[in-house]
Image (cartoon, rainbow, N blue to C red; front, side, top):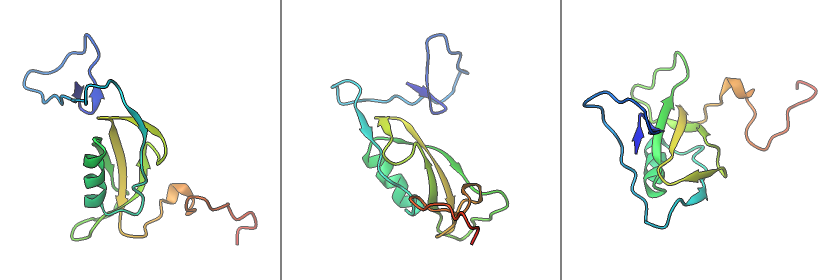
Length: 120
């Protein structure tokens, strides 16, 4: 069982009336697998993929000051990262912005690019 996206440990106090997620597996025990890449996917596509992988949507982060009203948001960052090992029912956090948005905290580099040592 999970509460607010986190596994409920023995002794955890939960408010009366709180919503608890019951995660049901296939009966074969914990199944670890590598998560796919959601980068560049529209948010609705990413949510559909998560459902198909039996994963939960964790938190959604939007860059400070960005208005997403009326735009189709795209995933520019995910955690856990693509290729990381996850278990059925794990929450996946997504960062969204307009199509082609680059996270300023990442220095504007895309995955696999080497930093420009000459600052060009």
